[in-house]
Image 1 (cartoon, rainbow, N blue to C red):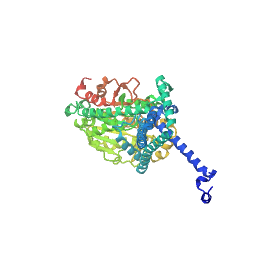
Image 2 (cartoon, one colour):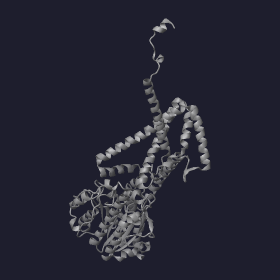
Image 3 (tube, rainbow, N blue to C red):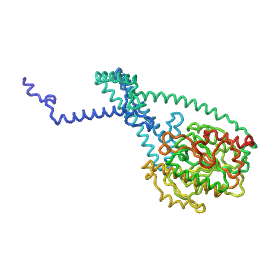
Image 4 (cartoon, one colour):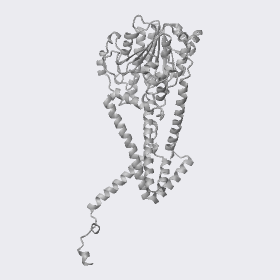
Length: 566
């Protein structure tokens, strides 16, 4: 050894590594492997995530996604810079697809359908409005901000996870290539043999590719359907009908159309729900019969499910199926002839009662209302019942005081929206003496003593029970009003707007809602004798089922000159 070598200070490379030196390296290595595993798990979970809540099971994630195999093969053959760009792009696209699935999961949970990439974006803004009504503007904005942050995080994390795995794959190119070939061969065998994790769930998955293909087709169909709808709006056999040819069979009658929130077929046919609702319907039939009324009922198929009531209202009014927000916006910006418009043209006074509206409602002009009563002018001084701003009995009492009971008025068409059966179904108001309703302050004790949404929503069974009780209350309020105040000229049409959310109605429930006509004058119900509707407030399983958009034309025809032969 030379003198210079002896005199040179020792370098780190010459110094043996101690346990203290090795520890940080070991932890970095372990941490790196954990991050890599988490990246792989995140990507595979995103690829295999179903877009329907009832399909999310442990077995759904025990499949082999072909998209991962294709991505591995592509990343192995690309050069460094291009590989990184492609990896980030694929990860970001996977993140966007995951967000669409998340939207689907939400829509399936509440509306029993998937998110429409063409027509449903406007509903997100309306959903924010409902959230503001429920938890306040500040809380709603905080939730919206959190959702936005989570959305950005999902896309970013999946992009970074894909980039990390691409580097790991290239670093271990030989092992990755062999593993990729082996798994691909296994995928082909499973696909050929039709191997399944459980019946209906193949081991060889191509669900993400099918998801992209199906959504692309639906986007194309959505655009074409919207164009067809815009043409259909212009075709209306009643648009030019003169006033003296409209609604001649209802001359001198007061027609009240009332929508009961979330009043669906399940409320009558599901045993757990009907135990609360059907006794009220049966008792209401008896009371109305004793008061001289006759009742007929059937079913309509609503265009919506679980929410977005205005789609049902506009369908009922326009005679067109309004099943998404884009159609709704197209409709209300048109001059389509509505059911209310027909009454207005024929000389009826037209009134809208919208107790939960807190702002100017330009759609009222489209429908044809001369006056609108809402939360700003109905005079309610009591507490909110969660989303519902006032109990249905108060709404009807205010309608009676301000419009129906007004002396010296002429025939009236009124649409009265009842909201006490709106989610979250807690607390629920109770019926009181009509003379005690006053300005609504009497309800303060009821709201304080009732159950809170937090109490109810801890237990799905309790959610269903409280929903049924809320529908029973709404029906009781309406039939009690008709019995107490309805005269010989009253024609009451009441119906549900849509089924309640799947947590109540079930995952595979229909879109059917009950509809009932109540009148004292036998000539009114004689006109609909050919409809085949059943006696009473409760339609049976064999009662006719019409699309909701068929009602307007059928009603105008039956109560016009064409229906005089009945």
